[in-house]
Length: 220
Image (cartoon, rainbow, N blue to C red):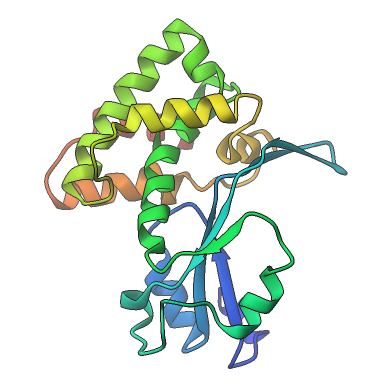
């Protein structure tokens, strides 16, 4: 992170698009006063070979600021003029002052889909299309939702499995980012997905055996 910060102007506007948690305060410290925004997308794509990127689903991209992380007095309700003038050329994006809700939602969904697809080496759709995979998906979603509600990462009446099922159908042909990383021999984001959720669960004294088992199998 320090190497990235060294190449940025002190008044740079930085958009971090990541569907994970646990890195934010360190990043804000390294960026030291620069305008920091978070982005999250419901679109899905995967790489097929070195040159081809396949769009599995066309969704929306949300941007916003996280005030409690930045400790800033700047307005969180609207994008900066630079961001607004730059992104107005793109389709399906919007500014969300409450971006944390979008990030938390995507995080919880990915804590179910990503480790399972990585372990089973399957596309997203298979998690709800195969009976034996669907049973595992439902069990993991139940565990993740219970803890996520305690941590205020998931709220509302909708069950997590319902959201997971919707995403699996809409991105049925997609390979999760975790599976893509593992297949390519890269470090995955699992420590900041399942690993981060396990850390937070441990702090409140709640066990997550299914998630812990998945992480152990995938990181060993």
